[in-house]
Image 1 (spheres, rainbow, N blue to C red):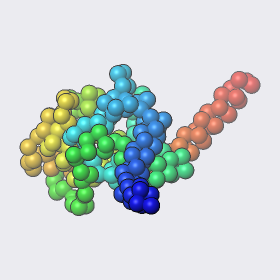
Image 2 (tube, helix red, strand yellow):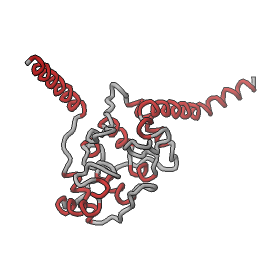
Image 3 (tube, one colour):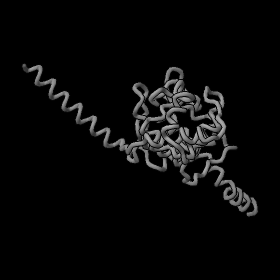
Image 4 (cartoon, rainbow, N blue to C red):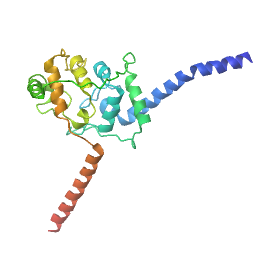
Length: 228
């Protein structure tokens, strides 16, 4: 009787750990299915594929769970090659996205998910553009289209990233990459303001439907040409 009771108590005590382990395993499988082909099985990227290095201390210190969720929902449409598709809630429900995020967080469990305060960064976008061209464009592109670094004017990025995330990313850098940390200054805050000033509303689902309609119209036009 005592032995059975002991086993029951052990099961109750260990249940949360078993559940957490099960969630990590499910999250890893979902990550492998939807993310690993571009971001790498270990989150450190795939050679020849331009995608964010998710297994990076600098990123995980800056990225809230909300940022990661919204990035998955928005995608990164501006990249000519290796554009990140958007994953809507029908294709990837919030529960599954949460498990993927837990898998990403598991690479650096010592880093807690940041909680954003919703604070806006005050700056001069005109001065920010000038400083961007001097300090940022060599890696991120003159028009923010990306290069060695991320495409900062991508609508998916700007509609996912808060001012806090951008500021933290610049001042912390990305360890192990070409992105160094920059001391917080008004110049840096002006850059944040410049990037935010370039944000436009973006609906990935609407863009997808517009693309389908455009392809349909083009096919119809090509069909008419072939008749003539």
